[in-house]
Amino acid sequence: MNGILDGLLRAVSDWNGKFTGAFNIRENGQCAGRQSTPNIRIESKSDKPGLDIRIRPGTKGETVSIPACVTHGGVDDLVYNDFFVGEGAEVTIVAGCGVHTDSGEMARHNGVHRFFLAKGARVTYLEKHVGAGKGAGVRSIDPVTEMFLEEDAVMTMDTSQIGGVDRSVRKTSATLAAGAKLHIHERILTEGEQRAHTEFEVRMNGAGSGTDLISRSVARGNSRQSYRSVLIGNAPCTGHSECDAIIADHGAVDAAPELSANDGDAALIHEAAIGKIAGEQILKLQTLGLTEQEAEAKIIEGFLR
Image (cartoon, rainbow, N blue to C red):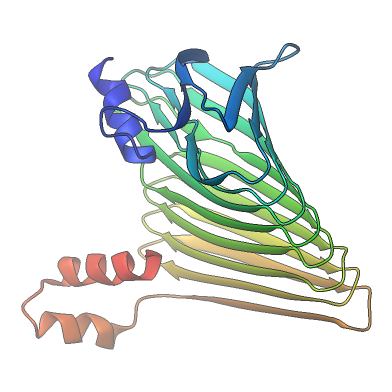
């Protein structure tokens, strides 16, 4: 394994020289390693690039890792991965992505992930995106995530893009049946001339379903971010959307939360706040011996945690 791939794997997944449990490593559009377990089967699709990951009903405590890495410029990778999670299963899925270029050529990864959670299944989905390399080529990551939750299924999605990604369009959608719950925590940092666009759309179709969506973002330099979330309540349900952003230097953020209640017992709330770091926060940390730059970095670190 080359050093670039090793570094990307460590940054975006639970790689420490090896994986435990089921895994598939994708490098520049090709499989660089795979392992299934008795309860988690990973197979290549027959009609397009990607995987079918099937998790047996009742599986508990297992992890499946499917990192995808682009290690040089001139690669435009597209993959389709489908996860079929059996009734009552409780698993963790790690699906990080790293792109690297030392040339003037673009390095891009676009992953389309679909999750089908059977009744009572519980999934923790961890997704980290990073860009690396010293080349002038654009580092682009454009993830698409689609989730379909049957009755009483629960999905927790922790997604982050912290540094190095020049262009990203992130699209996430979900459909929830009765009693299903979706929790999403997103963190994004952009710098320089970077651009990031995020879209969420969640349809709560079943009684007792619920969504909690929290986005934290920081736009520094001349970077720009845009955010749009749509919560749709088609049954008695609860939905909460929160978007908080910090702008620094000449950064810019657009936020557009939307709610659509189509049932008298749909309780939907949205919050959005955009602003700069408060001067008193900087001064307080400076009294503890930090420089202004160190104080700002500490505040941003805590905000994105």
